[in-house]
Length: 158
Image 1 (tube, rainbow, N blue to C red):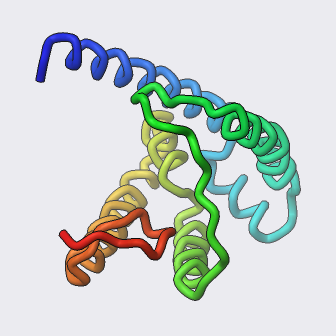
Image 2 (cartoon, helix red, strand yellow):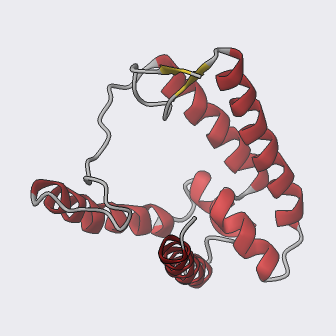
């Protein structure tokens, strides 16, 4: 890898780390790393998390649409385009598995890291489960001898 490519890669990693830290701070500020917050949301006792998610969608969806419409080029030089797919059985199954895990652990991947960084050791239980799920998905993809992003039917032979 050339020096310029390494420098660009390091810059992108630093920007990614900065945005990750900021995202974690937002999650912590909204208390999305606390088990009780998620439990109360999933049992429909509190609605602020639903409103938080809805506001994120209301802000990001028009912005993403505009970026795609204007032909935005990504920092890596690719053409920005949104994935579109119709709901299929694997979406429902994956959503159900994710939801069950979310309800049991009271967290999902990003808040699990925020849990650990804030001293909540329940995150240390959830993180191995996250990696187990990633490993099982990787095994499924490799057993099919295909690679893809999971959303599109155009798969390449590995």
